[in-house]
Length: 271
Image (cartoon, rainbow, N blue to C red):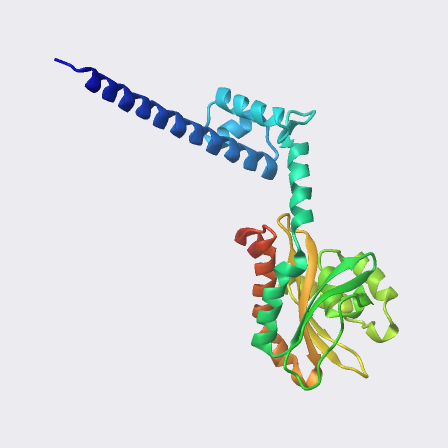
């Protein structure tokens, strides 16, 4: 004869199983919604195209897109294309405001200074100038001592040129025209084109200082150049062979900072 206790136990087990199924269904719905959100932001597509690419039925795709749009994470364009909504933009701005680029870059600059023995720097662009944000000293007896806050014309330093890599020939010519005559060279544009292919700037500074540097751009999650890093030293410490040897180190450090900003490895390798 079935007892009251056994009936209660069976009911408890049934309830637990039902809760488990509900939790699993909720997780699947969340995963599907996030997949659609990611596709909509990264690709231009209609809801029907998103359904086909995700393997979801049209009904489920429409329901998920509708829910995300109601919360402001997605929006419908006039041509039926799904795009990121105002809530995504708000979250993006919050993340950017909370991201301290100097703090993210410091470990990589410390690593560069340790590996190379040279001073390592980071800077960003402000208009037609670069602004140094961080310096980590190296072990050179004669060191480059450019301090945070220092401003230079973009075409006059390796750091500045790295900030210009995405600009194109016409823009490069304008910036070289603004530079001090000592920094203007007939092969300057060709050097920039080679640097685009290489992803790294090799800078040989003019007399009397003869400061050489190896610089790389730092890209954010969207692939935009938001900063640049370099190692710099007097020519006796950084000749042409040594500059070539340091190219992989600068690429690695820049990619690590980019990863901290949300850039994925596939995007970094494609840049």
